Length: 523
Ligand SMILES: Cc1cc2nc3c(=O)[nH]c(=O)nc-3n(C[C@H](O)[C@H](O)[C@H](O)COP(=O)(O)OP(=O)(O)OC[C@H]3O[C@@H](n4cnc5c(N)ncnc54)[C@H](O)[C@@H]3O)c2cc1C
Image: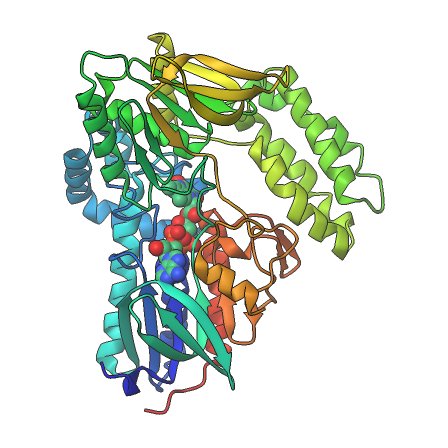
């Protein structure tokens, strides 16, 4: 394509994960329903050489990791019904690929779930994530092909990183790391979540004789990372090798699961540890008796009040969470009560207080409501039973090389606030601490530039940008996906957009707004 053809594109998507794929899918379905005759010109720019799947559902996550939620919690209707129909048609080849990629734990997943699969009981299964990637790729390609064949769509794919964006006279110019420049009327930024906060230096991987530090688990492909751990552990054959995972969230459990799944890693690791400030793992399984008897008394007490502040609702939610924990009731059992309890009170907040709740409290409450699938947790129980797993309750500080040339984990103990050194040496240190924020220096260059040029303004959460109800950060510059966090959209406070159902909801809002405003290109 010559540079002249690259001007006046109607819309350019930056990033090609499921936020962008669902937006494209919904936009094209709308155009099909409305029998649009004009030609839509679309560019999709993705820095990683794979389109539509993003980080969790494509090659960067590999083919043998699982959803963190059961299918009925992952995907709303009508998308779930469409996905299940597709799963039933494709399951044999999907399972073959899953089996090839995974080890004995993948085999166990198949064994445990094959009866439900054959009986079409998918809703409660923690389905391998990659299956969804294959599905979304196929569905998006299908409609692109159909409309392209009809002559009403032209799609241009570019593998490059967008480094900067300028706006002049109502047109946007995108600067790519390949030196190319793309001019476009509309932009949809679908960049995913902010990158992981680095542990103690900004290198993605550090390898020394006695330490392997991995700061980024997915951008370099999980299979690559697992390969590096395997090689590092093999080189240490005969010596003690311990793994420390910083952060006990879903990605920490996932790494533990995959290390156990790969015999060449599992057999060479002596001890695994988590370090997390709360010392609690995500939960699984509802305790029916506790579910029936638990009452959110603190949240309930606020129901009679006519108006409330965000802080009052959050304080009541924390007290109810404390009560649940004191009664030994896990997050899987309490989540429904707590979420319904505070959800029913949000109408009592004025706009400013709803924004405060959205930006400062929603995620904090969510941190104490983490859930995971039984296959990931079973692996943890198994390691514990074999005395191969510790959970340190504290805040990671660093690793320090002692006189024996070994690295030791340093942390601040949550209960005593004292600085401590963990007594076992650390050899593999895996960073699962969660995302950075928009106030920090380590945000990607594109985001820095967008802020500097005032094209996007960080909202109070520092996790996302202000957008209007058409998801615009500036005129014709839309955002979809996790960077919408911290907004009130259609009167709903959105504190995170990591959930597929919410991504689909936002993608429909974007598709409708684009469809309403789309200016036919000059053909
Ligand atoms: C490892 C992992 C597992 C998860 N598991 C689950 C789960 O089981 N259930 C669930 O509900 N949610 C899960 N999530 C939440 C997840 O955020 C969403 O499900 C969803 O994938 C977000 O999609 P996205 O398209 O917004 O972001 P992404 O999938 O991150 O896609 C964004 C894309 O933009 C590209 N990009 C970024 N910057 C640029 C640039 N400057 N130029 C060009 N391209 C760029 C990236 O390479 C990437 O492909 C998981 C998230 C992760 C990271």
